[in-house]
Amino acid sequence: MRMFLGHMNFKRSLFLAFLCFSWIGVASTPPQYGLSGLSVFVDAGLLVPNAKQANFYDGRGGRPNTISRVLYSQSYGQQIWSSLKNQGYLQSIGSYNEITIADYPEMYYRLTYQIGLGIRYDYSHGWGWLLRFDYSQLTATGVFHLNNAVSSGILTNQGSYINCNMVGVERRLYIDVALTKRFVLGGNFEFETQFGFNFNNTKVTEQQMQIGGTNYSILDVWNGANDLYAGIGSYDYINQGGLGFGALGGLALCYVLPSIGSIDLGYTMYYTKTTYKGYNEDDAFAMQHVIYLKINLSNFSFFQ
Image (cartoon, rainbow, N blue to C red):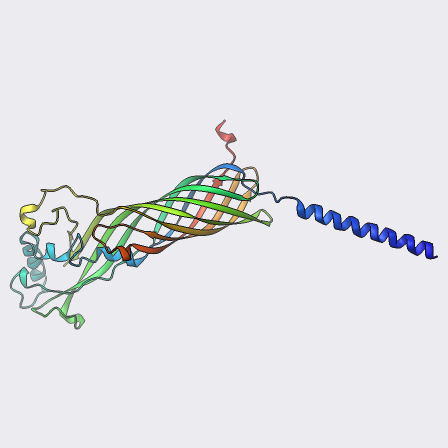
């Protein structure tokens, strides 16, 4: 009997040892990632810009594009005054020189798209790198007010001023260089993290103010001159944007398509500088956010 129990304990120990070594063997097996080697990708997403940078378009003095340069010019001021007078907006204001600005706009970017493409390379241990090019067009909007009567310029109530819209438009190109790390979740799902650097280029393409239902461009094509009547058409427009740089971090939930690639739903946070002519350097750095859908293609057999 004792020999039988000893034999049973030996078998039980042998079985447990087999399970243990089997578990160790499975645990030590490297995970299989959905992407390996070179891939190409396209992405499309929603860009959430920072309002701090949109204030470049507020039309204040010291900016390249100012409300006062156009409002008080001989060529445009008379036209603005006549239009407001004919529409009944003005009271006791005898000329365009007497129109006063009650307050300047607080500018905000509208939510906009971001589209792009890139390449990436993934290694067998889950690490990789990517190079991404993204494009977006941003629109900044705000409202400023003109006094409808001779005034000190202090905003008092809605009956004492004229609502005027301000719009600025720019184009941005983002270039991202980042390291990536993927983690296998199971069931064809993976989790990815990203961190790296951003380089960007901004081109200011348009800035307009709307007064009394009429749009007036205040984009500086006069090389900073205040006498717009004499300077119209004399100068070529020089881009008011420029090159910027910063850092990025991101994460994504990835669905693996075996032997094809993956579809990623992700989020990227940028802390980056956007450069504008004459804009305060302290306000040039700001957070930007992107939510995107990306398709990675690692199988190129259809090109053959």
